[in-house]
Image 1 (cartoon, rainbow, N blue to C red):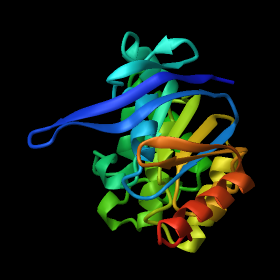
Image 2: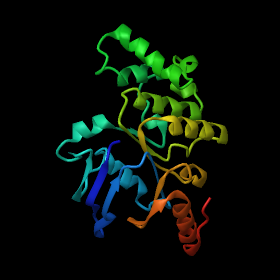
Image 3: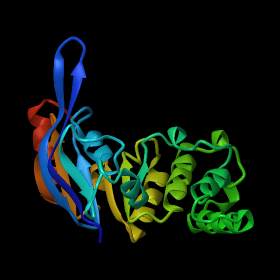
Length: 238
């Protein structure tokens, strides 16, 4: 199992009017569990936390590493180990069809075009998407697009899968399908979600509030802590 480490990692941005703004306060974590959920309100900093894991965002101070590889000094190595799934699959699917996207993911590891096509079909079949392989991504449903984006990321067989609110655009049926797929993966999976039933699938839950990790522990306790936090803030937790 890969180990993701945050060592006093913080993110600060410069605002033209108000000066420096802290998006994520210094956090130290060792993430080694198979399934980890990150929950919190919109704008709390949970997506920032996830983007630090594969170097999409670099810490302003402190460090983040994946199995010892630092995201700043060894960015390409980290990105080879960590796959990232975005909330909106249309920001990730860049080719006309799902087959094209999966083949694009395999371009470096499978040089021969014919072998790459066969490998892509195996990936698509694994996720029940082969019958949709040649359909335009714009003709797919939101759920089908998200599963296609997931297949394209997993085609490279990353050791860690990071998913930023992957069920947000999905209906109940496709959310259940996504949860079943993620539960069966051998990879370490770290994900954000507003769906507390989905969060309950995790072994460990982090609750993020106003740029700080305010709870770190078992899923049931983390969800209860988030409900209390939301109630105090006058919000509704799903």
